[in-house]
Image 1 (cartoon, rainbow, N blue to C red):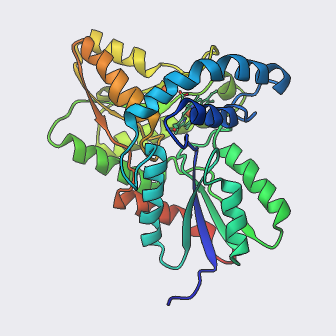
Image 2 (image 1 turned 90 degrees about the horizontal axis):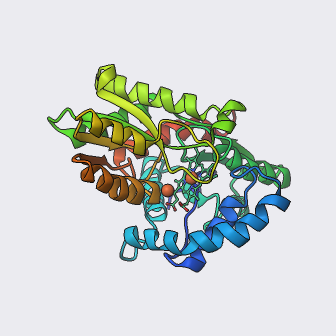
Image 3 (image 1 turned 180 degrees about the vertical axis):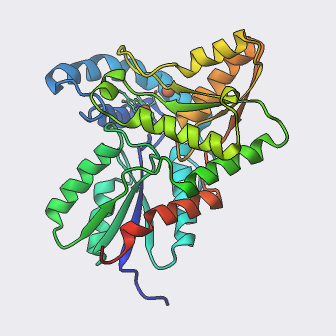
Length: 324
Ligand SMILES: C=CC1=C(C)c2cc3[nH]c(cc4nc(cc5[nH]c(cc1n2)c(C)c5CCC(=O)O)C(CCC(=O)O)=C4C)c(C)c3C=C
Ligand SMILES: [Fe+2]
Ligand SMILES: [Fe+2]
């Protein structure tokens, strides 16, 4: 038997429903959209809207979308959960002396219970790696809230969180290699599609948009793409605010109008495939682009590719050093 590890790494993703049912989607969205980091309205205003309008209207259609991408079998489930689990196993193989687990910010397994469980197992050095390459106040900072609460109740444990890895050389190389592998000899237009964010948050100082632009530029540079061979857009708009532009939908329309009929789409803001990539991009946007005469070639996320696991292990290493 190898000695019990003294340090642990927690890979944290957003979270996802436990089942493709309206009840499970409702539970998940109530927790996610009830976080003031995600929707900043005062609870007295937002909670009635959320409970009386958003959840009743959204639970059923969104459950149907999850059902359309649900993975079969014992190691299946919601793609976000299944791929995050598999990625944690791949990172574990890279870090034999460290205990590697995964956790979710919303839903299960919860980040708070993962941190408490590691401490109960005697581990006093913990690295937390949110699986968001680009920092946002809505995602990374919300993981930071849970970490801060743990630090306050576990003063004997050192927790170090990685804020972002948007231009990390290993990660950029892994994304570039996945794109190259997928494209083979084709040099179609490459569209980088990132999850959107309300413009208001960027105006208030959220670095997310700047980091998305830097990620896309670094990946395009690694691929040796000239400027007119790629573009960047934002998907997954929610609610009535103005979100980051251009939208992926309008960008694809504009490409079709220009006669650019073959487009590769990659989503390097998502560590693993999920409803936003598999349903929104690879199904819905691909269909509407097809109706405009185009062919959309979706490039999967890094998921549990070995180069992804190796890049994340290297990114986490400084957070796992027993004295920093
Ligand atoms: C105000 C609403 C939302 C903000 C802000 C937001 C930011 C944000 N989200 C991700 C990553 C993911 N989001 C996912 C799903 C999802 N996102 C929102 C809303 C906001 N996101 C909703 C309502 C949903 C659920 C699906 C739906 O109802 O349409 C997912 C996938 C989850 C899954 O189960 O597969 C991810 C991943 C980022 C990176 C981000 C800010 C930068
Ligand atoms: Fe989202
Ligand atoms: Fe969406």
